[in-house]
Amino acid sequence: MKFIQTLTLTLLCACLVYFGFIYISQIDQVKKTASLHEAAKENETALAAEETRSTKKTDATHQSLKGSKKAMDVILYNQMDAPKLYNGCEVTSLAMLLHYSGYERVTKNTLANEIKRVPLNYENGLKGDPNDGFVGDMENGPGLGVYHEPIYQLAKKYAGDQVVDLTGKPVKKAIYQSLEKGYPVWVITTSTFDKTDNIETWNTPNGKIDVSFNVHSVVITGYDEEYVYLNNPYGEKNQRVDRDQFEDSWKQMGSQAMIIKA
Image 1: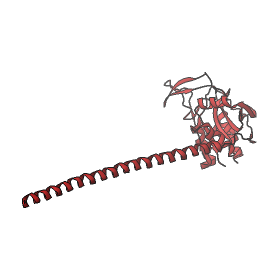
Image 2: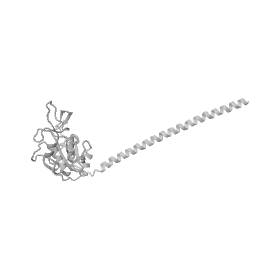
Image 3: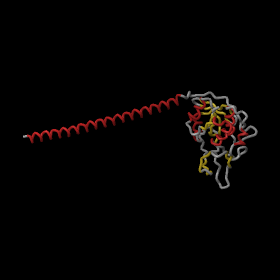
Image 4: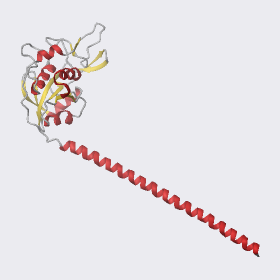
């Protein structure tokens, strides 16, 4: 009998230990599951908060635009005025920008003498790259033009760190926000201020690039819902141009833009 009682107690103890272990395991599993759910919930909350911050930031960017800026009184220089720069729209536009920023003695021809230049045609058959310097003969032609980087480096000789290259930025940031802050904008566009079909692919020392002899440079002075206003170095001050067409041409020419924060 004593043996049976001892065996019974041993079995009961074993059962209690077994079921106690199962109970504790289940409790741990519930806690782990709850912890995973809590972590997932916290992650979802964090993602939602980040998305909200991003949305607010985007909305703030859009809301920061008033939608218009009256054309600023930027001096007009004509590239065809003596001494003539037949292909010198880029440096002429830079001279306007520098004048507005307080560098009033810098002339278009001074800048023309200082800008880096490369040949239109190399002896090995390659073409000049406007990313390296002005391509060809600026004064009389033939020539193509020059892109933002050499112009940026030239502007820095006068205005230093005040020069900001906004090339590649969205049009609202590069142009319209800059205008609303009181900064005229040097840009590359086309002579028609619309997209052009006159595109050529050149082999240059730096590889293939697409260029157009319709390339042109101006200074954007203002804008509204329908138009941009610009100083055209062909001789027109605050010329009114269709905004959508201008944006198309600006993007086609590489979204090149520069300001001077003076």
